Length: 602
Image (cartoon, rainbow, N blue to C red; front, top):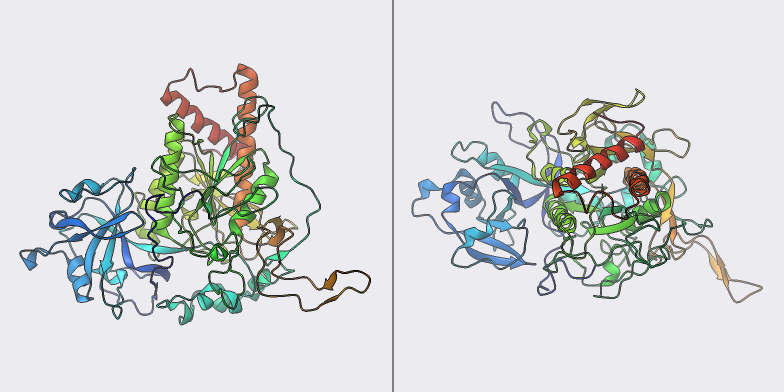
């Protein structure tokens, strides 16, 4: 990462962990005619907004009342007539809060003109509705505000919860180190909620927890003797091209980043001190200096998930649940397709918990970066595959709309020739997890697999691909979510990959003593010492990058054949119109997806 999340000229920190709540179905007030809800985690003081702002809201917007990391909150002026306020605002007042609109999704950053704050509001990109309060004793509840809006026929906007997304694989025993019980949120319900729907406490198959134990698939140091994957290098040293002139595929990993490792060079939070060894694109940013990932750079480097990995329990340990997660994914990509370029997009920290609105913003920045590269503007490279190992459970999935902010940005990426690969989830359930469940429904029992419900998949829009996990013997991992929305399965349990060599947690070997015949020491294995740079781990988070890399490998082969046939180092770009070039990108991505999945087509 080359600049802080706010950009080079905005160093103001913002809270890494916002207040969150659990929507407990047993305590939700069930109104007549309303459908039942399922449990989910959400940010307590935010709602996602899509659609046209109500006139009584737009007319009262005023200049920024808050500013944090270049995000302006436009507050509402007091109305002349209380009868004109929306039910959303009435409920916010009841809670002791005032309303603000947080503007995030503008294509370019810039100051909000104080005289005309409406120029910062873009209905097409959406906003975040904020419940603002200056009193620490008030705990906002976005669900109650959302519920009040459902009774308001005067508003045409669409509000939804800002869900908490999880990227948690199986790290160690969930009862002792799971972030829901150990994360130091001051107002966080994770420490008190009984987890009535969490598989570790309620699922009858106790074997799920075995994957969290080192030696049975949990994160554990191992020794790698296979050497670095072989990579084709050009004589002129251009890292973007293969020796024959074919453009290398770029795989964006939306996760915790990529740490220091022999395969990937050095990583540092200090500006200008990182190196990607031509494999990792570490300096990607928008023209205004904003990085692609929105997750904050921690104040202390040791709290970074890809350096020290001790943000959740810095004084006592153990390592963060997903410390090294992004590096592990990058290593799997590099093993399967060593000629691919890896673009890290930091959207989550070591706790493994991401915020939906933050992930959406990171994806929108990535999409903007991709579009600029397609247009030949700046030094960026077009993106070919996106890997997402994050997911959440929707409280009312039948209410999910296809103009939902998360599905919308994923659709924009796919429309521009990007394959989107998503982890299916690690709870061993059939309940759809999103965004994986945005994938088309597939009958995997046929050969080739058949799409039975296309959803928003078309010849011009490649499918989202949801990936479940396999055990080493080829059986389906017990923890892997499943359903017709799961596209395919790939190795994801007890796989071996890279971790940052800087990770060294406080848990030590059980025995350590002076060596008798040398000046060294002998000991048992250090369970949190990853100086060797490799580990074994389990989760659908690691099955998804395997498929992503297979798609990239197929895409590379398709491009190489085109270069050979056309004897042109940049085939189908210089002579083609932008529309033709985009159409060819989509066609090539579809072909690569079909080849990698064994023939999946519409």
